[in-house]
Amino acid sequence: MHMETDGKTLRRGWTTGTCAAAATKAACAALLTGEFPYPVEVELPSGARPAFSLATEEKGENFARAGVIKDAGDDPDVTHGALIESTVRRGQPGSGITFKAGTGVGTVTRPGLPLPPGEPAINPVPRKMIETAIHEVAGAETDFEVEISVRDGEKLAEKTLNGRLGILGGISILGTTGVVIPFSCSAWIHSIWRGIDVARATGCTHVLGATGNTSEKAGQALYELPETALIDMGDFIGGMLKYLRSHPVERVTIAGGVAKMTKLAQGMLDVHSKKGLADLDALAALAGEAGGDGELADAIRSANTVAHAFQL
View 1 (tube, rainbow, N blue to C red):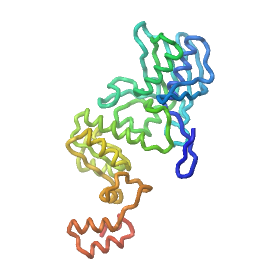
View 2 (cartoon, rainbow, N blue to C red):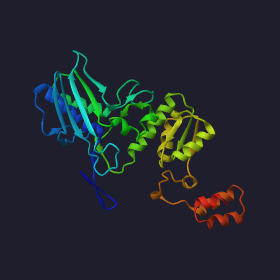
View 3 (spheres, rainbow, N blue to C red):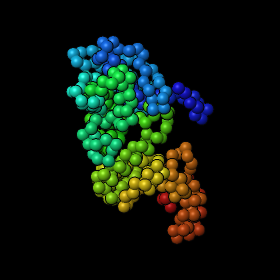
View 4 (cartoon, rainbow, N blue to C red):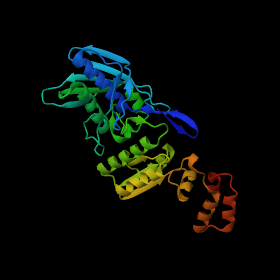
């Protein structure tokens, strides 16, 4: 699948949830029939049915395991190339389909997320996709244990926000559409929302949204907030504020570098450099409103950078 962005053709990819569903379907088929399907086809929430080849296959006593390599397309996803494996075993009669976090898949430890504490970090949509995949193979038979694992998932998780959200031991199995859109901001914005949910669920009344590590440390030096109150919003200030309108807390602090905060003062809610520049004329006007004289305003307009203007 491809898409056009800025005149370039970019390849879409597959979420960890889609890969987990494909691996599970193959493992379940092997458990029941003794044979691994090739290729293995799964249904996305949209109804589309992509097919996948298997990277690993293993059968043992009372289990079958299959693996799929995640292809994130042209998106710089930290899980691109990761091996997503599913081990399927027969469950106890009446147990239904149960999920287990294998090596490299995190476990939820804090409230406020779509799954309760103690559950493997396999999100609701991937769970539904996995259940659908099993039903396609097993029909009415539903008593299976599904264990999802990710090679090097614990190391990969260090590059995500899982630790801050209280998801420990590995990555999350994610995806709402089953498809990765290259350079989409949706994953980051969803992590901001989940961070706010955790903050509220753990009783935080004051949250700090920071554009980066330096601004977060500066905010922490002032307020000494718990880790659950710290929101890594990046450039997506609007994404955080819009969610806070419907999921409010008593106090919100926004921390960022002077250029990004100048853009916010101009009304920009996405302060990425590609979205626009800090306007020195606007900054000079703000200085005047704050009581600065004409000489200061002229100096700000003539400054080389916003950082230079703040030194005047």
